[in-house]
Amino acid sequence: MRKTSTVLALVLTAVLAAGNPAAARAHARTAVAAVLQLTNAARAKAGCKPLRLSPALDRAARRHARDLTRHHRYSHTGSDGSGPGERIRRAGYRWHLAGENLYRGPHSAREAVRGWMRSPGHRANILNCAYGHTGIAVQGPPSHRMWVQEFTAP
Image (cartoon, rainbow, N blue to C red):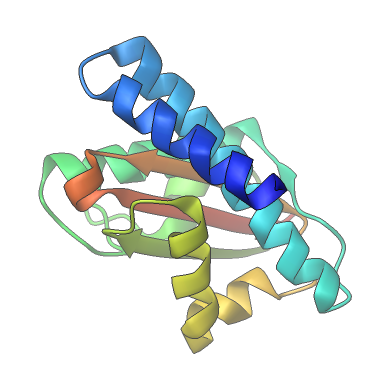
């Protein structure tokens, strides 16, 4: 029942978000919460502590997702040549270990996390118990959504 209600909420907010910026922001918040919940469930199975959202990492993820969407790119390198660590630092976060997951296309948080868990490098980021903080963003229309998840250890 819980899975069904989560999926229904995501679909409903996506439909409402189609032409409404406030609804689009609400959909993004719902999607971020779902990615965090799914990521932390996978981490719990591996014996890792849950990740906590960081406002600075959320900023870094949103900026990169917006940049990738705006410039029709799919890369860990920003349009200005920056890498994940530099973007995270610019957002105001001091770190000693950082990683980034990207995914383009999935309609739901569940699809994004499932895809990351099937990729060895992305899975390693999610299951790296050294990471304690995350930032998550989703940008763009359902036909080509961009998902960005930042990971850090302070």
